[in-house]
Each structure stands twice: as structure tokens, then as C-alpha cells.
Amino acid sequence: MSRPLFLRLHRWVALTFSLPLLLVIGTGLFLSLEPALKATTAPGTITLERLNAVLDAAGPEAARGPIFIQGYDGTVALGRRGSMTTYSLATAAPTAPGVLAGAFGTTRRLHETLLLDLGWLVTASTIAMVALAPLGMLLGWPRLRNTLSGWHKVTGWVLLPLVVGSPLTGLALAFGISFTPPPPRAQGNPLPVTITLQQVAALHDMNGLDFVRPIGGGRLVRVLDDSGTAVIYRAEAEGLRRMPTAWPRVLHEGNWGGLTGSVLNIIASVAMMGLLVTGAILWARRELTKRRNRAARRVRSSPA
Image (tube, rainbow, N blue to C red; front, side, top):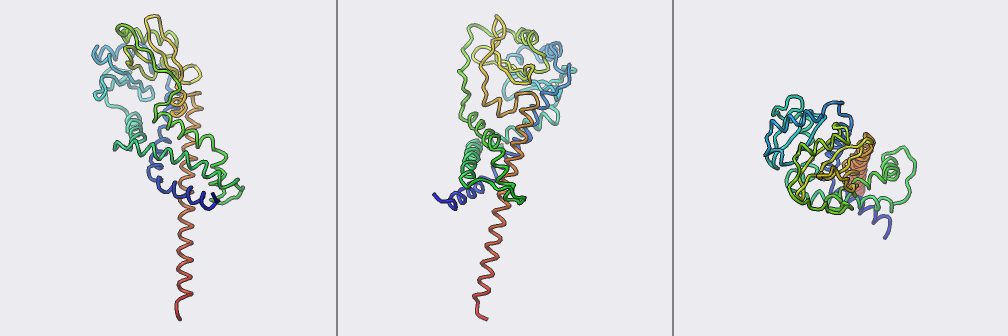
């Protein structure tokens, strides 16, 4: 296959999926901020006492469902799926989600389904983003030139691991690839959630608690460890049992290394957005030049 064919494929794959890719990359850029906010939650925002007060206010039925903590928002959401209620960590009273927490929730749905149950289109666009990298590499080594085309190529080559890694881990999530075995089903009834929270407090700073949710007759807990990396535990009568890390999810969401994962995801999103926008500008310039040349040829060939 010749270079012009690779160039044509690279160009038209990008143009075909340009709109959904803009939405997916743009929402991914915004979502990259959330892990940084979680990692920098003010000390004392999430405490065992505050969480127990929220559980008392919500009642035992709500405590049986998932519990999602947004320390940066000062809130915790719990209840059944589809009927979650948000409570203030400071007052244990029902409240509306903060602007940031609400924005992250809406943006996540847009990122995953475009708000229209179009997860298949998100997946197809992500596959296209992965395919654009080898197509770009087949066009040859970049030249260090201070032009739009030069910056486009250098960015793609220098940041290749980030540009490819982000969509690849996204595809792993879409297809359920975690490289971890499914959690075993617990025997008997799950422990009271208050006991689970006490187990977490014995091992970790509660400021790092992300969620507690029921699964397979037990509960899974996700918490940021001392390095700022998300780890999963299964709550059992004997204590918390560390589960294998689902690295595709942790890497894709940026929940590792404290601020490091969040910053690298931001860089990856900005790079992908820049590649998409500069590629579109380069295509538009070529098309405009072609049209001008065709018009000039028509003028020259027309009878005087």
C-alpha cells in the first residue's frame, strides 16, 4: 500500500468520526480533573463519624445500596440505583449535588453514551482513534518544522503512548476486559455497612474513600491508598481482603499516583484534541487550495 493511500485513509477515518471524537475527547478532558480533586480533598472532609451520621439519616434501606462519596463536593450519594439521594457530609441533611459533582455525572454519561444510548458509536469512534495512530506512523517520521503540519506530526509521535493508551484502556472497559477474575460470591449475609466503614478506617485515611457497593452477596470498597492509587477491597467478616487491581479502569480514569494520573490524562486529552483539530484545519486548507486551483484552471481554459 502506498503513502497516498495511507494518508487518504488517515484523513477520512478522522473526518468520519470527528464529531463523536470531539465529544468523547472533550468530555474525557473534563473528567480528567475529577481524580485530581479526589486526591486533594481537604483533610477531615470524609470521616467515619460523618458517614455514620449520613447512614443514620438515610435509614437502613438506603444503606443496603451503593454509597458514592464526593469529598471535593462535600457530599455522599446513597440509595438504590435510579433513586439515589445526596446528603451533606457536614450536616447529614439531604441536599442537591454541587455544581461540579452534577457536571461530572452528566459529563460521564455524555462520555459513555453521548446521552442518547449511543455507546456503540463511542466504541466505534474509540476504535477509529486507535487506528489513526498506526496510519499516522505509516506516513513516515516527523520533521521538526514550525508549521501546523510539523506540530501535528511531532505531537502524534512524541505523545504516542498517551494518545494510544487512553483509547485502548477505554476499549478494554467497553468490552469488559479487566485482567482480573470475577470476585467470588460471599457466603451468608453481607456485614452491616457500618462495620465495613470501620474496617476501612482501620487501614486508610477515610479522605480517600471513593465508594462502597454491594456485589455478589458482599461489598466492594474502593479507596485511594497512600500513593493516591485506587485499590479495591472485598469486605469480609475477617476484615478487608485486597482484590486484584483492574488496571485498565484505573489507568483510563487516572486514579493512580495522586495527581500524576490526572495530569497525564489531561495531557493525553489535550494532545488528542489538538491532533483532531489541527488535522481538520490541514484538510480544510488542502480542500480550499484544490478548489481555488480548479477555479483558476477553469478561468484559464474558458474562451476569451
